[in-house]
Amino acid sequence: MLGEILIASMGSMLICIFLGPKFISYLRVKEFGQQIREEGPAEHHEKAGTPTMGGLIIFLAISIPFIALSDRDPASLAVLGVALGCALIGFADDFLKLVKRRSLGLSARWKLLFQLGLAIGLWWVARHEVGLDPQLQIRVADVTVPLSDGLYLLFVFLVIAGSSNAVNLTDGLDGLAAGCCAIVLLAYTAITFITGEQENLSMLSACLVGACIGFLWFNAFPASIFMGDTGSLGLGGAIGALAVMTQTEILLILIGGIFVIEALSVALQVAFFKLFQRRVLLMAPVHHHFELMGWSETKIMLRFWIIAAVCSGIGFTLYQQSIG
Image 1 (cartoon, rainbow, N blue to C red):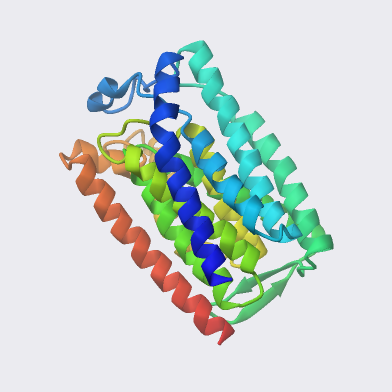
Image 2: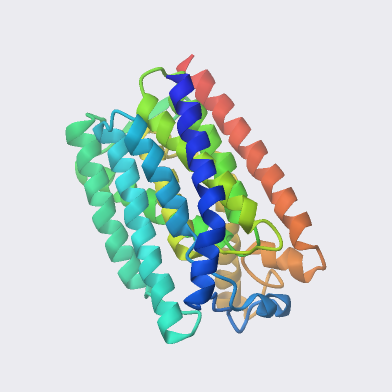
């Protein structure tokens, strides 16, 4: 099975690399270029027009090897379904931005409503097809907290919405979100593989890693293409769904620590401004703060990758100890 997992991951990576140039050319011809926020860093305005919606090629590269080589069990199909559903939400958001020629697309209310629908589907599969118990596993303390079905559904929704939107917030610099996602998903590839009972989830995680790495070939600074909300919401949804199916929702706070930091920086900035009319950071999310401090994009990207790797490594170690 390990060989098939590696082949699937390599297949996803190579699909991205080989189809990338043609896809980028197509987007340029159609003038599907990124709209830049007016309030964003001044340096980002020169990126206006860079092809976006690269998430389309990411999820094409993921789906083909996974469907061809996996057994397509309910758990892995549910995770893929949530990922594709979140990617579809992101595609609608990206498309509206292109049509309206501005940086605002689908409203937050509609995004959350569609994410709730995906969470209900994932909850149903987890409970009735996979047979997961409605509970929280605090693996660091080896504590299990039972939940009612209603509370468990709410918890699944919070995980999916929180994860997808946190990755979306992280996608603000060339290569930042793709690299961090690859690192976090590599941890989930290991988590699902060491149990010996989740090979299909492991293959899907590996395909996600491969596609992220293949996409980085074109997305690393200076980026030839952006993943857009299509990619960031989809990848975030995949991470959240993997956490639900592996019952590592609480541990995800550590494994995906870099995304938590980014999301908290926005929440802190907004809360502090509303209370005191002052800003804690020069700009939120926090990667823009360092950018305005004079750090280069590559410096921020690499250091955030290091933080992501440390968080994911610690999280995986704690998971391994909890099942040992």
